[in-house]
Image 1 (cartoon, helix red, strand yellow):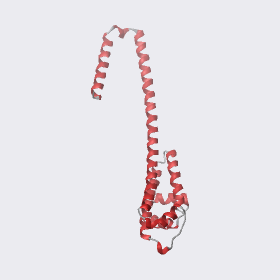
Image 2 (cartoon, helix red, strand yellow):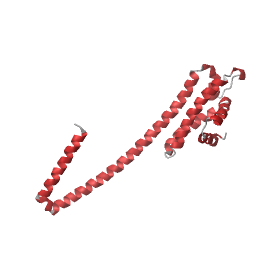
Image 3 (cartoon, helix red, strand yellow):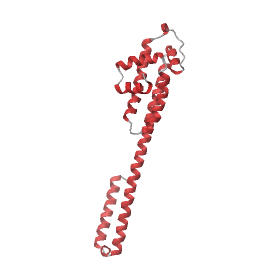
Image 4 (cartoon, one colour):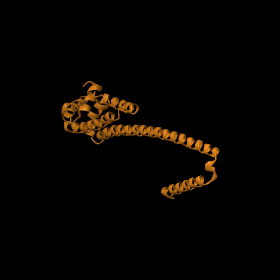
Length: 189
């Protein structure tokens, strides 16, 4: 049945019972009035408690949703960085420098334009996470988990000479003030 029909039927039954009560001799019985008062008080208490439980469960579900969003955002960031290098095998030297710290390349072997393009994509995705961290400063637990993951990977990335070069270019052209402040605060750049 439609929920509106069920609600209307319940309302009609309650109105009918209310009319029966006032027309019967029960409305003048003191014991019955006391019993009704106890029922009303109990139902009010249960209603207040249910609102309290509903509010807490909503807050918990929001925290879980934020946690999932941050985890998905970080996983998407990490996966897309790896996919960028998989689809561009000529930049394996950059990948090795980013993820392992090994710098085995000659400057003449570098593809600087492609490095800048990939770095710009990485910085843009990194900036999204940093902006979310800034927006959700109310939920410290959720932020701490995601920020810890981000800082761990960025700590490795900022050891790369190529990444650092491209960060300098990016921060002067495209980065928001908050992102620049955040990176400077966390990495003293």
